[in-house]
Image 1 (cartoon, rainbow, N blue to C red):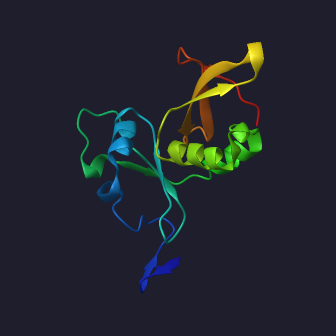
Image 2 (cartoon, helix red, strand yellow):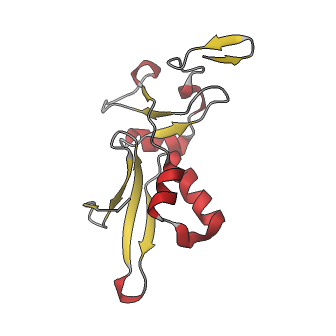
Length: 139
């Protein structure tokens, strides 16, 4: 249980309506099937998803709590470490907002372009080649 503003919240309650504060870029990401992360002032963070529907209404949002943490995953795998602290923080923030981020991995002739997006259901970051096929990442 958590106390906020004199109100006691259970760990299983979402203390505010997340659709009231969804940015336009996040809405596009939700419509493309990706999740958006929220960390409220009270209680644990959660992911927002939108089931595959033609038109979403507030009651159709899927709210999910999971132990998946983008920043921890990036740190454990070393992904984005070459971007420097500011670039790494920007990458983590964009992944939490549901963006599909393009990166170049490797050096010299071994460099390849990949796309990355958060997958809280699978508790990982999906890393895909330029054709959209998932490539493995060692954790």
